[in-house]
Image (tube, rainbow, N blue to C red; front, side, top):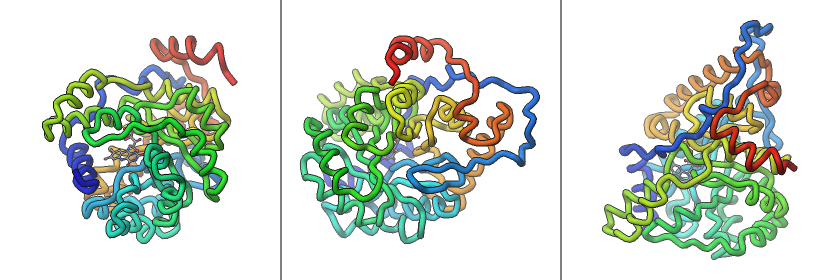
Amino acid sequence: MSIEARKSDHIKISLEKDVSFKKTTWLEYVELIHQAAPEIDPEDISTEVSFLGRRFSHPFIIESMTGGTAEAEKINGNLGEAAATFRIPMGVGSQRAGIVRPHTASTFRIARERGRDAFLIGNIGAAQLIENGVEIAFKAVKMIDADALAVHLNPLQELVQPDGKAKFRDLFKTISLLKKELSIPLILKEIGCGLSREVVVKGEEAGVDAFDVAGSGGTNWTLIEMFRAEESQAMDKKALAEVFLEWGIPTAASVLEAVSSTAKPVVASGGLRTGLDAAKALALGASMAGFARPVLKPATESEKQVVGKLMQLSTELRTAMYLVGCRTVEDLRKAPKVLLGPLHLWWNQRISHGSR
Ligand SMILES: Cc1cc2nc3c(=O)[nH]c(=O)nc-3n(C[C@H](O)[C@H](O)[C@H](O)COP(=O)(O)O)c2cc1C
């Protein structure tokens, strides 16, 4: 199957089917403490943040999604323009398509053309980086004049994808090599199964500048690949995917794993659906909150629709900040909270005994 057909399947399935985990993000196990006397006015609240050397209007990121097809070009254009208008970072999808088939590079570059001076994050798969060498990363950066580069880890997707290749053996050696020559920040991200402490610690040693957990509870790539396997009659892959459908570290647990293992910025993503989800993730110590599928449908329509969705998320975040009495995002990151149930158990077993 061609890369174009695969990318087109991913968008179509994400838009038309319910592709969420049954398992949740576990953000429902984070209770922010209501402050009945906020002692600030709503107008005093500032959502501005610094991330990787730039100032942004909100602690939001439009997560890496697409490129390589005509529809992807429309999506990337709308997202790029919205990122510039709203002053937040935006990731493009895996750029392998644009490198292997240069005539599709424009479907990524459109984000720069319409996004003007937006902070754009390039994207390349770790497996492709290891297989082809670091030059492919420089091609990705050049293609969109990227301000940062994300390398994605997707071992489960590679195993259940009919045409996947699970080759991650020399990852950290390759990341170190890349980091030595890359002049922009390097982000290590998952795509929906979460990052563990072990991966974050090794990533930091290799020189990674920020981590995007992409935990489970939101878009489920094993499920998307299961639908594709079914469609292409790859019944062995479908059966494998079925067993691992709910595999992964819930987003709230993954944020705790990451922030307790590194002082580098951590992006919370995977199943964040409201500004309140973002507020909880930030209160766990994340620096930014990433959204993929919530902005996908608006991006198939217009830049205005994307900005509208971001405004709604902003109002929800500001409301949560007001109710916990936090004037700034830095205050929110230190806000009192209670961890409940399974998340508290996770904290006890994995984090409280072994912090940095
Ligand atoms: C349609 C779609 C395509 C995606 N493609 C990529 C990709 O090419 N590279 C990548 O690193 N992540 C990709 N992702 C994963 C997202 O960046 C994000 O980590 C994940 O979807 C979790 O966020 P969500 O639950 O808000 O969708 C994609 C997500 C969606 C929905």
